[in-house]
Length: 268
Image 1: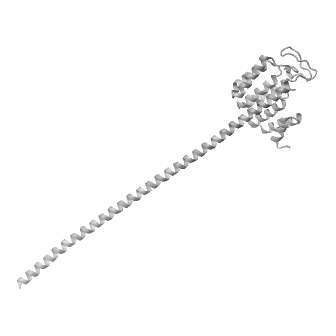
Image 2 (image 1 turned 60 degrees about the vertical axis):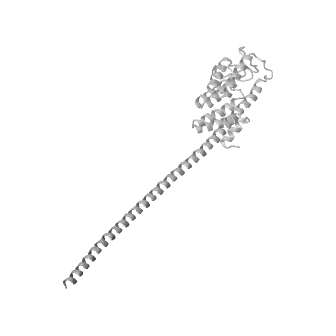
Image 3 (image 1 turned 180 degrees about the horizontal axis):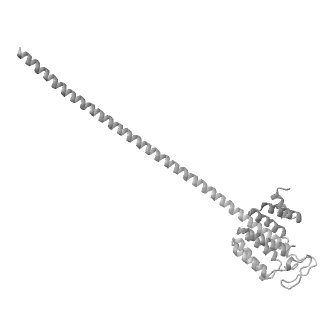
């Protein structure tokens, strides 16, 4: 009987030891499984982070490319606008030169019955009222001397080249040297245009008003008034500019400048 009990006890002990070993193995398995799950979670997390970072970088690169495209588009627009401005300035200069050429031909024709007085001879202009405030008007039918013509052409060349400060200085010197010459009014007119091109609008107005005062019979007077109105508009004096245009239309209704003034005022 004791032997039987001893055997039974040994069997029970063996089963307990086996159960303990089994519990340890199960625990290890569970720990291993937990570690595997943790590792998997970490890998998934890293993968997601990498995806997010990559996507963020892609979005950033896309935004950069979009900005580059926008900059390129704006640069293209600026180039087009710059070219348009250059062409407009060229057309304006051509218009000025064409107008000046036609007016110079007109001014060079001697007045009917008037003597062709030499520049600086002291003869008084005939066929028109004297200039205001002691300023002398060009002699009727006066023909420019070679030196006078060269000085005028030199100043006009400076204007054509875009050397507006030089043109202002040269035209001013010309008017002082040849105040009664047949080209004096033209020089004063281009002086005002050069001031306008320099964006010195007040000086442009003063120069053109000097033309109106010193050479009231010049064919350039209507254009000078039109340029005064343009300078006044640039200064923001729109009401004053409108009055100048209306005055131009009233005094010189048949002039080309009056036609342009009407267009600016929306008149027919």
